[in-house]
Image 1 (cartoon, rainbow, N blue to C red):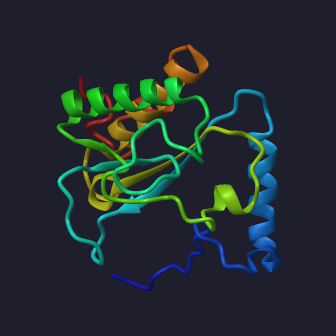
Image 2: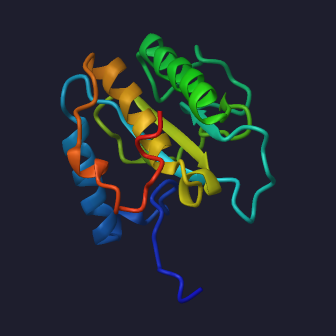
Length: 183
């Protein structure tokens, strides 16, 4: 399979993470992007890999709570709960109908750790979603680009109130995503 690429996750940064120059750059970029009025962010994580049990759902939404906590919780990473519910419900509906995937809201994962990067770096906005996607659905599944497009479409429709722009480059047949335009 080849050598594994070294990577650093900043989802739960170490206590001395601010001494890492790459982490500082990450924080500066994130703060710049999220300082805009109405900004939302989605942290995409891979879930249910080799070290985790297989779960019955494929997309796991978290907004800063304990496993099992509902939408209207204290100390949420999302302040605009109505918009979040629209995003969640539309993605849940569309991935179910179009890709046969299932979603959950804080059923299997918690994101209430004070070290979660949204909390530990003090991002300026108040609408942050943690979305864990089953590893094989985002890495190996032939419909992975369809899933990414579907999520982007919902975010654009709900947050920006406009359709996702067309990207002609993605319509080329030789880019390795044969199912991208599947209807």
